[in-house]
Image (cartoon, rainbow, N blue to C red):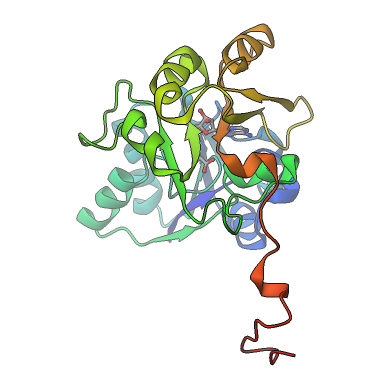
Length: 250
Ligand code: SAH
């Protein structure tokens, strides 16, 4: 018996790891975050597997299902959207497993920001432009520590990737405009890798109107940074004078 905490990817079933697929196939009990995990993944479940949508469940109900499965020697697959390292609320579930001596394994996934960048054909680290990426969100009900608000991060020149923020696009623009200036490019990708995916590009000057017009108020990634101008220097990796472990400088 084991609990698999699975990063179930951004939506497209083709972006699920082989390990995740195997765990879904093996599981006797599946608990999936119905608001964002693609229900198509459930077709890999074996016949007779019990399936729970955690969207309407409390933490205690989720751990109750896991506890019962454990008592019965059953394997559980707990599916979270994207990768589990970001805004997935698995830490308290892992904590519960540790406290209750329930064995678990974490399977990483493709984050929605990777899928959004794949759609855009966009690298987030371009030589001479930015070598740093900040994965964050606008402050809301869940606040981060002081000093790491968007306004402060805006001055760092790092590429910013915002989760959970599209419905607050006016506030995002207000917090960034002073440090970044109105011409800073912005891209927004909604439901990356799903058939209904939408992409909007613009600048801090016009992005709020565009996002609202397109009705992109949820399940979207916002990327802000000079890298979106795609005018970085050539990567040094392919520079003739830049030898590395697999190739000597020529
Ligand atoms: N762990 C997830 C993030 C969960 S928080 C991951 O790694 O992607 C939920 C937020 O993720 C949403 O508000 C949205 O910002 C983003 N998100 C999830 N799926 C998405 C998708 N397919 N396209 C764009 N954004 C998505």
